[in-house]
Length: 301
Image 1 (cartoon, one colour):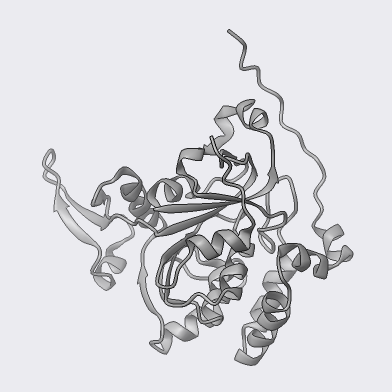
Image 2: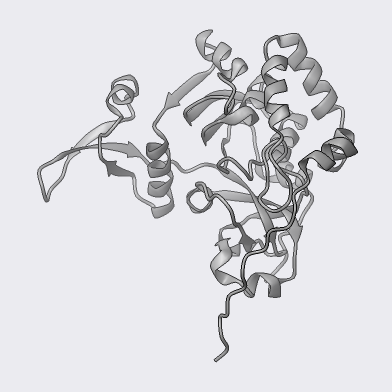
């Protein structure tokens, strides 16, 4: 099996194109900020950005002029308030959008991963969304006669997933909170995996149940320590809550957003330089103590 290992800049250049539908996965942690910053640096335009909970990763990409449309469920700076840039662009009519419930977004990815044109779902909590979003349709169940909501499959051109560790072929381990990474990987046409560590294939094989993303689904794998900051990577570094609070202030004015992008995205060449620029005080504040799980015995036959 040939290696898929390459620098992040090379992976973005090869696999993220203007006009693509991009899905940056990860829920609460493992959000691939470094990949988003590289997309901004490379000047991608007219992207359709899809994600459950856009987080400030998409606020930054919208601010940089990368996006023409947003497909999402719940748009906010977690624990703080609105995504100021996204909200301003939506209200001004400069950013097209489709809004779904969390479950509907995952259902769309599940349909895409299964090669189905749509999937039905219960209508709990979606009545208002269904009235506002014409992509919600209905179908009558052929078994019970119940009327169910449906949502169309979502098949991103490229999905970007951050993981704790992967081998050079793209087999990837994830632990902690699981989001929609697996569904996004199998729904997408191309998959870029960023990893805190690149490990020998034997490490991955030692714990197969933790291999959420297999090599068969991966297009490129990139070694990008600290990729997820200001979100966190379970077992590697903590969430930078102070950064999320600070972004709310930064994003209040276009001038401060532009200055931040110039300093922290365009002004650094890569994630290593970004992390170094954050400085030792931030590194120490976000450091985590080891908390090991118990080993399991797979046995040998």
